[in-house]
Length: 232
Image 1: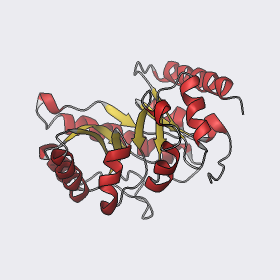
Image 2: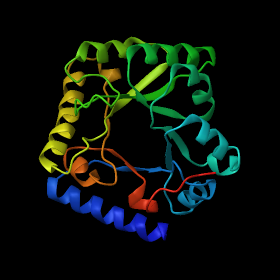
Image 3: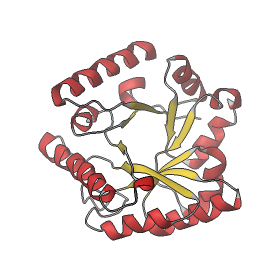
Image 4: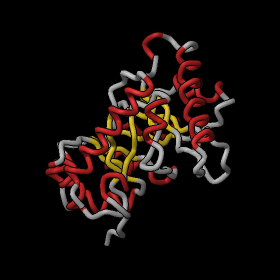
């Protein structure tokens, strides 16, 4: 694996996707390091990237404990499903939770954050594909999403979705379009100080489509590191 070369190739693909669509969004690359060893996170920092994403609390806790100095220079994002009983640990480990998938979870996160005298940045996860195996708010239920903006202790910065499990680019594109339109709809209904701008959508197999449809964040693992390995 040559991470530096892979990062440059990804950046070139991002630029081309922006040129095709006319997008002027600043794109944040989130290096998803799940199943990779702590050394991979150190390599991310050396590559010039500044955000890492992890999916599982226990795995992140084990890895982060081995590289505390490195982590102070990176934004640590929880991008996987969060169980309510792991909220306390998540707030200890991560700078932001990008997978808030229900009002109940948002309320519990906010309550815990307030106890720690902090306001936690979050993204609301939306199930734009309708796949039953995926978590997230239903895009049609905008009232539930809007209700989250009144919860103290969290700062909603944007929306997140996981693209459909298909090779059909039209279906993938439609899901990303749904998220972009939902963001616009939400912004038309919230107060100016609560307007959101982040769209975290697109992974290694579909991030170029996501950028063409307005992504501001892409979550990349395989495109940066190659096939997953099992961290021990």
